[in-house]
Length: 429
Image (cartoon, rainbow, N blue to C red; front, side, top):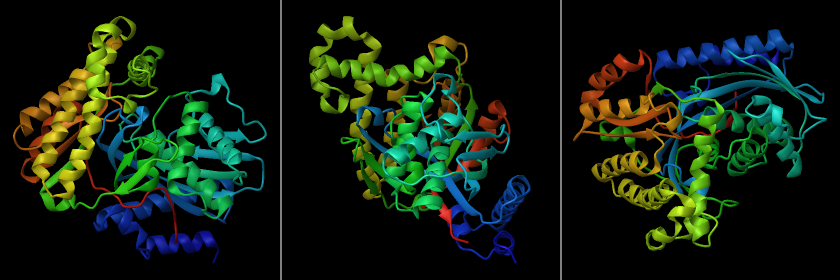
């Protein structure tokens, strides 16, 4: 029996506990995941004719606290979720990486040229090339490999499909060529570096860290080269609430919208520079308020409002962690709502001014408040300007909440999630 036949047999007989860790204990869900992996393995074998495969999984992530704080060296509260990217990969003993992603055109990366190119920005090729380049710079081994992958992390969903893909590629290179010796946080840094320098997006490090590390974590980016990551022990299942992410659509890939997104860290740092600092973590709210009359003309009012948001949400993360540690879930929910209001009023990442007639997030938040006011919590999720919202919904309102949101955004737009403890991993099967 070949290795690939042995893996498929173990998967189809359910003979591996890793699947329950990743996907829960519901047998219907597990059977569907077994079929998902088997299908991808067969696709890999038909495409690349190789048997010496390894399996990988990388989760999406949900941001629970700290909206747009990471890129100014702030704090976040985040968690890995059970929607994931999976991959089947094998070395090919060449200088090429071949990737076939379900639903997308296949592509290859020539490792003899690992320089960033403007015409490749905002492509998967750029991300893969950047990750390989960074592995080499850090002294790790790289090599050619073939990969098929399939994602259940919706693109543009705020669950960080790009970060999940980045740390998935990092995990593949780490395990195929380096025996897994790169740690999870370093893998996250590699993904961020590739996105900043090759993909062309000035993202922070939260998304990649949450996807790479797994579980419920708080991350302090005061020292971005060595972020402080701490696991938080809290049993969300015992609260009687469900975490629901709703895909509300919207968001645009045109230049104007990309510029709108990029303006967030730029404007925050512009305020910091007026106070002699590089990032907002280095200043206080009191210093900002004191300086407002002098810097409005240089920064504009929106930048100041975004700086006020940063200070509030950065402080709120500490309070949210304390509330969870003290099992004060009501206080935690109150702060989720406060964070959402701050994002709406101050950070202004609910809709972009270029497409002001499309306010899918605003509408979803309004509907959420109508159903959940006094009984749950709701806020924008992730980067904003479209994408998703997040809600903590009491179990007795799940049916009403889902039907209300899906009435507007379509059946299947609501995702009831759980927090997964594993980050980007190679499956030991």
